Length: 493
Image (tube, rainbow, N blue to C red; front, side):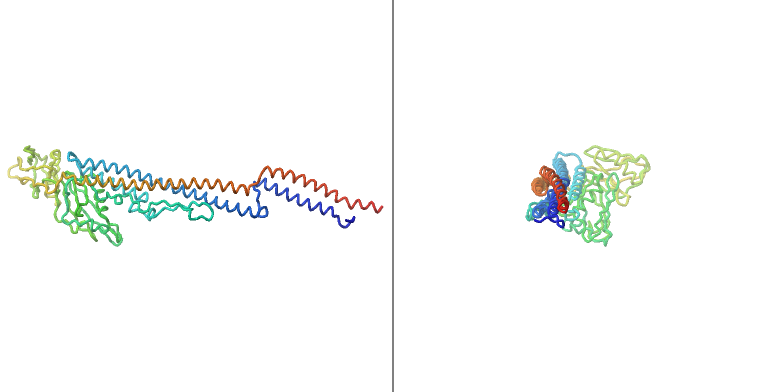
């Protein structure tokens, strides 16, 4: 190499090495400040591609864990609802067992009112958790698929399926919707529609305005108006929905509705009652026509007082029950309604109910035991009532077949509910196992990505010290190289 003023080769070499050392030091500082060994594709193109694949899987798995935890939360909500329904089945079994005893002397109608209310609450909660026949949408009509992810390219193993297909835990799904714990054969309206064969079509249509049908149930305590309302759509009410509407509106009256073995609507009570119906506004009614006559309880002894004279204060009506005579003395110049009130105040304790008729001009006397009625002392020329003997019941009030059937149905319902609870519990465990695996994979993939992408701080720190020394050495050497042309001038002196 010749000595030249024009070209300082040593300076060029020093500049090149200074640039290399500057880049080395800058890259080392970038690693230390970012924490990554690979900060651009030029650092390690192949390693970056592998690390990015792991990062993508980690992101997928993190979201998959959130998906699975959401699924677990949903199943826990369902599980809580199933637990509530299980407790309600226990109560139903208690009520049915109480009613199934021949020695029970209470009011089976009162027991059945609570029983029917619980059936309605089971339906409400089942629909609320998405496992009822009336649930909105198809929330659990098929398998529940939860995408969690996993190893790259193995998507068929990324989905966890929880099988709740067809699980229904409302009263219909559990097979207890039509059960009751009432005694006897019940009182049927002669024109009652066969609710079972017409189930789903009762009070259908209505062109947006729901079809309705009005009923009046009269007891010793007064009358209760019941309105059965259709859906306002092409599909109508089921038999169970009709009964539920009756029992909700009859709650507290001592009268309960149920479906008879012949599909007809039945009414039960341990006290006297009567019922009549108006015609349906449109569609197939609960009854095929309006009831023109008041139907009295078929399970009671009864005698009608269709024509009742005007009572004066001090007039009496006389009852004989089991050879015991009881006189009811009117407290004032009573109307027919006031006479009914006086009779009920005095005779309810002895099991006799006075039920005002539809026209309000007479009443029916009803009792669970045989009785006769006669005229007590009256004012001259006044006949307040017509004497007579009560006609015997046509039903069987003490029959416990309904309660026995309910016990069997509830036992089957407990088994059916247990199967659904098993599916839900299995699903919760299945998703939890999937979460555990995903978390394990996240840890493994994160460690692998870290080994590729992350900076080794100890090595980078050593490289920084090395880079600083090389940079300083390069600068010093460049300074010396830049002095070489100046040294050549001494040859010209």
